[in-house]
Amino acid sequence: MLRLPDNIKRLYKKAQKHCVPIEALFELTHRCNLRCIHCYIDSEKKRELSTNGVMRALDVLSQNGTITIIFSGGEALLRPDIFDILKYAKKTGFISTLFTNGTLIDKSNVKRLIDTGVAAFEISVYSDIEKDHDEFTQVKGSFQAATGAVKLLKAGGADVTIKTVWNKRNYHRADSFLRLASDLGVELRGAPYLSVTNDGGAGHLNLRCSKEELVQFYTQVYERRKDRGNEMRKELEKKKYDYDSLKDKRICGACVMKLKLDPYGDVYPCVAFGEKLGNIIHDDFTAFWRENEFAKKFRALRVTDIKKCVGCDDYAFCRTCPADSLRECGDMLAPTDEKCIVAKAQREAFYKIIL
Image 1: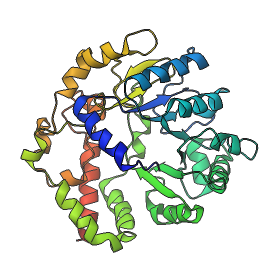
Image 2: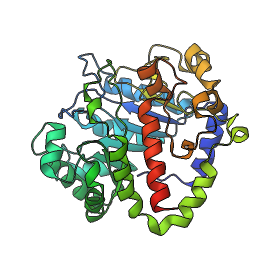
Image 3: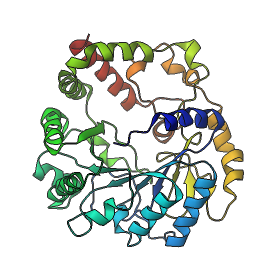
Image 4: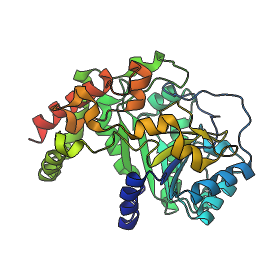
């Protein structure tokens, strides 16, 4: 996982204060060679930005303060110009991360990929069991391809993380999944959140874990972290709900210091919000970034505006997402049941194992 130097971290704080889009997630394509059952992306058949268009977009981002960029998809490696794009990003000065399913990385291209200058790679793996992973992606052989890519990238000296979505199919195997990551010599990063798809689909939400399942999951996680108990208890104290310290804190970094760019040049507040701010090729970026009405409204919100969360004992474990709230509840300030259930389960497991 990308670890930023202290000077960049300080710039992040300034970016949040002055609404500079220091971090961008760039979906280079919505095409994919897998069919993951939880995927939220629509596979539109639209004309993607050309190589020159992508490079022009990168120039605009650079001119407006973007420093870190995540290249994603779909599957970004389906673009035949991906190596040129990644090299151009490095040349332009970006610190870049590539999100990929890993299935298109092999001995023939791994060195070329590393040599583009990508700072970190994150590869999606959905189970430590080959059969279960392949059923989740609906493509046989995808587990071997993904874990093979991890090994190749690690052997080449790359910074590699595997990431997952915790759900009803894998929550009970957290301990063995973490062992797989350890055996591969990488960190495992994941979260138990499943979002409504971009076109409103919710059929896959039956994969969300119940509170009891989440307690079981987090118990496994905290059992492996007991040696960090003192440190975690101190962190918890800092995260508890304190109205005075939160009344000036923005809800999140979407359209504040972060944005999402889709394959067609359209700019959004983040990967989850569907409210388009403008087009990076056809519109004046600086103008719509500063003046878009949705952006201005969202930037004015503070954590204390989420009334349901005021004084909540679970706040330290909460990951309330205003975009998910808007999709599921029709209100950015109405936390979803999913987020509340996850926070309660995590708190219960934490107090049982760590405190």
